[in-house]
Image (cartoon, rainbow, N blue to C red; front, side, top):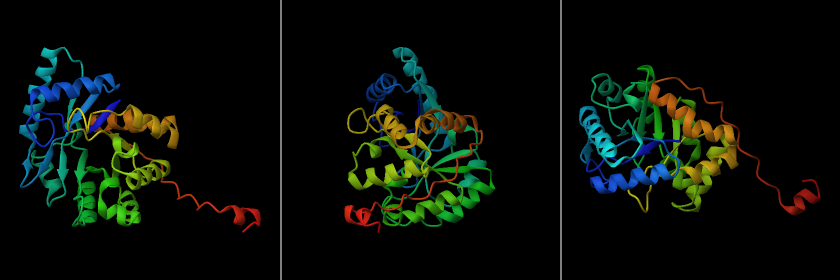
Length: 261
């Protein structure tokens, strides 16, 4: 499996604070069946401004650390870029790191609690520049939860969605689990990521959520979400998700079924 969203680089954002923690996370990922972790540190003005050269240097240093520890986990380049103006231009300037540094797929984070300003325009601008946004954890974003049709609109515009593994397992509550399951069933989210920040509460594990994905949408879909499409992201290759399925009709009660209503 490939983990498409992980804050494993030590001391660069609110993820692993030091080398020891990052190494522990790497061991957990390997034991869970993850072979590649995409390091996706936050890029957010005012908090963590991790531009491309800084992240690439941190990745090389961490790769050396893992080699010294004898850990055969592959660390691939990426970043989690907060919604902001001029993202496409900053990618072209070499300031923002896309998946695999291939310039094609960008992990995009929306604000958790407020309306994402100019989100439709940003998706359009990125697509026009040949960059497809992969929106991180839409199931945990209040604006989409309040009106799920807003998320369907993002998919219509060409964005892909990345669901957090622990969302599917109920860590963030029943409502987030329910919407995650519905979107997986309908094909409204496309890849799985741990969004790991530490070895305990937010560990870099995918296996249990991958199994749940397979139960909801089938083994082929689970493989795409955890291997085929993440691999394409890193290579800068296109993917073609099937059209989302319509929502399931509400289940009728016993009396309605009995009398054919």
